[in-house]
Length: 188
Ligand SMILES: [Zn+2]
Image 1 (tube, rainbow, N blue to C red):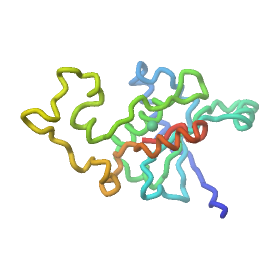
Image 2 (cartoon, protein in one colour):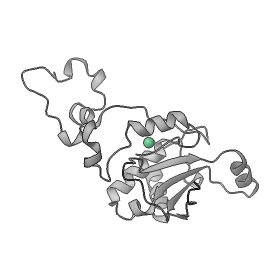
Image 3 (cartoon, rainbow, N blue to C red):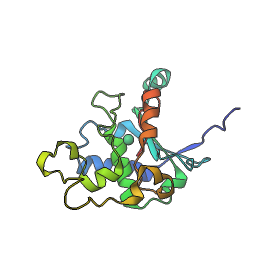
């Protein structure tokens, strides 16, 4: 069955955030040129309830890239998100999500970078993102005291705990594997 075609409009507020982030974080976001990035909001659809993909970066490729170049359109990446999400996210979430998406932009223009970290949020939350390289400073799971985990972050209950701030889960990573060019990121 044919899917309803998505209707997009430009999210100007998000593009302002792109510019500001690049200004304030030039070292972190050095591969990003704000002119190359457009942010589009989907108007006629909402994110699926189970989808933790809050936003994604789509590199412009192939025929579209050619058309853009012929017409001197500098856009090389589209950040795609849902207006229904954008309208309810607070500024901190908006900025973090845009920052996250910009980190996917590769220094080689047109390419994207995959996440360098795949883990369970419950472990990262309690033990740090770099827990596996902490050596002796890593708290013992089976020491005198139990490690206190945030049970809302258990992978088995993420569906019920789902909220704006939830980073993309492993499912999205799988999608990335299957369609590296199209869905090269998802957010969060
Ligand atoms: Zn991502």
